[in-house]
Image 1 (cartoon, helix red, strand yellow):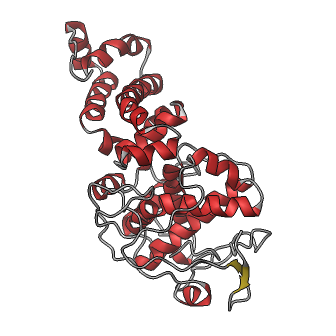
Image 2 (cartoon, one colour):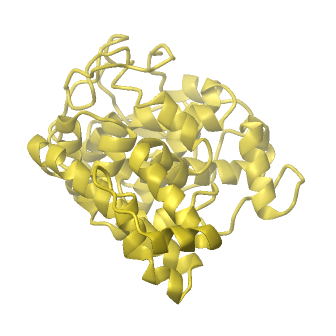
Image 3 (cartoon, rainbow, N blue to C red):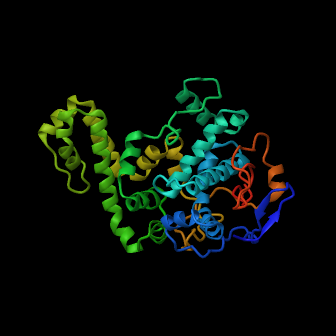
Length: 366
């Protein structure tokens, strides 16, 4: 870990290198080519190893997480607070021995919703997007403006449980290719680094991953909503929507005309075939999934078609927000607004200032 210093608020936090100039990507660290799974292992190790790993995770995934947080909170400061606390919560859980559920980026996006659900239960609820607050209230059945959402901490956002079940049933590498390569449209070299593959493997596995996802979704859907007869039509439904060479059956068409479960399966598989990015984002995120997919990944330090997190030139950039200089220490906390402090671990042997909003002692909020 870097040298520790005292902030004006009295907490201990690492000393940061200077922030890059606006519009330039952050400097790549020693773990720039390490897969996310390796970074998870390093995160559980001692402080000198964990800190660079966590910085690399932040460099890769924070732009997309912040972009999603902007859809969940009111104002830039709220989005940065949600992002900071989502990273801090996810890192703390990993340090305690928990495994990230699926890909790191999707895992972090779900943590944004977990943090937002906590905000919805106290005075910070006014900093959340009204539609999200209404979603939490509807899930809690309160309608009071202070609901805490669904009881399942892994799905506080109304994500489709069938899509989640299907996605998490796939091997982790295929999950990564689907999320990074399809939903976020990362370049193949970036996705390759994240999942621990080569760019050629990523390109070759995209179709296989989509086929596996369609099959897993169909099996989960029929198991959840169908009966024995419906499950008998599963293979025919799969073949009827197969890309490129669909096979049609008169028996299937007759069954679809009278079966809601199977007609829904056919329609959803057709959507997953034709618009996989939108369907996956909506199903796996729930709240604002379509908007997230429409906005795309905010690359590197400032988007605008610059370098990506892995240093590969992106074909496009969709960031609609200018880069702001990093704020640390008491100045960041002074700007965090009312109710920004969140309960959490006190400064420990890593020097994290978990209990504060803003930059959480590591500049997470900036």
